[in-house]
Length: 427
Image (tube, rainbow, N blue to C red; front, side, top):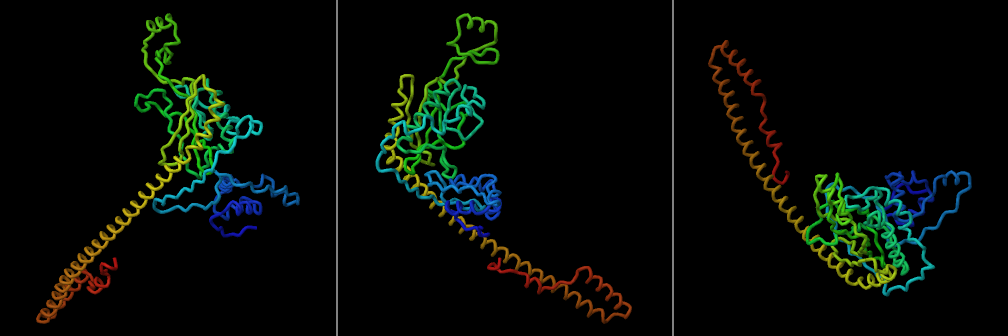
């Protein structure tokens, strides 16, 4: 059984041992999380866990064989710590990314040692078609964890074919192509698929993009991959609530639509059937990319075989950019720490000044009140002294009047004000 007190960080080996020693509900209770959350942790760490019904079989002595802990992959989380919720936001010191690329380009495996279809492509067509389309005819699937592909319905097969060829070419060199693991915090590509932008920003909504980027790991260095279909500006005629391409109309259609309908022409961007493969740096503040355009004459297989070598040759450049980005991040972090220190010192100085001001003002008020109290007490004493020379009947009336005055003013203890007063250091 597991210890009731969790120890952090939890390594893959520790979690693997625990999930096969105790039911998930009990283990989740130990770590103070839900069982579904802990299951996601197992997935991120590539730790196999018991299937439903496992513990019932254990109870009757028919426990299935426990699978071995697989070797950790580059995208797997190696340690896990339950996150602490801080009371105030803080900026963490940038971590130094230790890049360990391979020393040489691995020789490509033959195609007979590779699958016909890459695992990210299997079943992707059905998921891409299950969604909607943008006004520019691009697919916008509902599922967000998909291969990074921006494509129209008519060219979906071509886009998947290009992605499959590229992924298999990379994996033939043992460069693993995956959807980026969540814990890496890798960014997706910024894509403007227009053929000609004329320096103008995109005026329509962004195309579909996956929740996490598609990346290839060369050693432990990730390159982002996206494939998109280029859009071209097309002259369109507005007819009955829809836009029709002018170059696909007959002269008779143009004449009829112009005379019978309230219409006009405009230029809009639509998918062209031509593709671009884009490799980029998915690391924050590292701007680097390579593009390969694909037209009808491009030999896709031949092009994809060249890309692994070009990515490998770019490692040094990307590594330098990462180091510079982290150096700049370190500078910004130190500046932020210095600013935080200055702000704290200024706040402390303001606090001390306010404490001194409040103590001084309160002391002045105590002194003023002391004078008022002395005046009041002197008044009562003098009245009592003067009353002694009066007749007994008048003395009685004076004493009653003084008692009522006392009740109205109340008892004032000047010493309590001193006891309650705080010096600047006590505030």
